[in-house]
Length: 99
Ligand code: SF4
Image 1 (cartoon, rainbow, N blue to C red):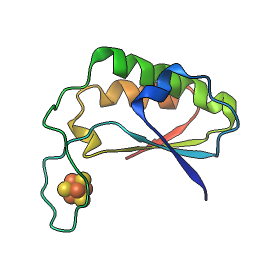
Image 2 (image 1 turned 180 degrees about the horizontal axis):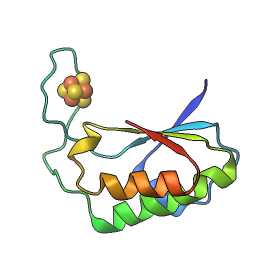
Image 3 (image 1 turned 90 degrees about the vertical axis):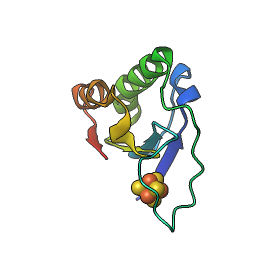
């Protein structure tokens, strides 16, 4: 199955011809320290509200463009306090959210 990684700045673009599964990397930090991890984390742990709103707009658009599954990734996506809002936006728009 193919997938596309959409970065936060993509929330303001109009999506076209997307694959059925997309990965949203919500946060660039993590509360684990796995030895094998290659991720580079930012010290800033908060995500601006404008960014969350952009993701919500994006999540509502994705199903219209054929996306049926959204994977939330990071870092550690459960650290984002707005995750329930994003899950609701994805579910309400017809996608199957996973983390
Ligand atoms: S991002 Fe994943 S692999 Fe990396 S430290 Fe966090 S839990 Fe471990």
